[in-house]
Length: 446
Image (cartoon, rainbow, N blue to C red; front, side, top):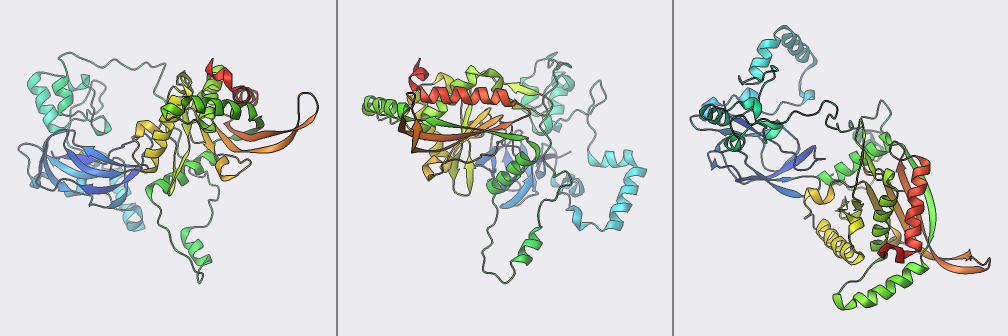
């Protein structure tokens, strides 16, 4: 039977995307590794490669189609000996939207499905081999044919295609008798936290209701792109499902500003100029090492405690934001962090980051001090355990250590914390470590 080509998940958080452009047409012959299409995710435009060889028999999703869900069939691949006549349009065409069905028809379909479950199952998928546990083994026809020729047991081969489907490359690289090690029953794979559905809570007026409210007023409709939809969905989920609490501290910056000035003079010949944000990144990375229990993320049915300090930094771009991740930040010098951050920020603004550069981390920093804000509360970017909101450094009167009134440069920070991961005392300990690093910057070089 023909093989469906499915909409890929090009990043761990991708749920849908735009099929921007097909680079092949019906009738074209493709090989494994050939570029089939350009797909826009919420963050970038990426190339989609073929995982098997064959002929493009039918394109199901046209160029420019938005909101294509991951694992939706987008094309059909014909293998040797197959023709377009083999394509079952009923099984390969995208399912019609639910609202297009009349209630009476839905009821009839439900009854029919209940009465003939075996027939429905047979029409939904072609016959395929089964493992010893009775579960269906998903493999392309070509992969099954090669496996039979080589005497391989498909149940012992791990598939790299969509849904774990076994493709040609998997069987060609497999060795007779090779088997994948069984997963430990005591350590099942972490499941992603379910997407927020609102839990029955009101979610505000509908689009139609809002349009009616402003009927007769002068306004411009701004179409939501993938990034803005994702930002809206993820931060709504964050505020609805993550129990935030907030810790605030003032940090005296005068020692840091003096130290920064001295370092920048020494680094001038190398073309490096350290920013206050570079020191904040380093301070947070070292604090996560000093308070390791706070270097954790929520994983649905468990917590993951990270060993390295992978610190994400919010970067504003037109229409949204990126949070590129500085991995192993505790191990890097201030100059290395500065150079890496400038590169990540520049490529983020051009939407040139690869998924592995903005996915992950346990902690984030959002600095709006350059806009003159004294302080603000940031929303946690799941699955991070915390995010530090950084305000501007401003001159303020303070009482010095000698009891005399003096003036100092003070920066206000707010730590937003996921209470499922970090309790109040632990969060306070983490923030204290951050403050101590910034108020005594030379210790960060020790």
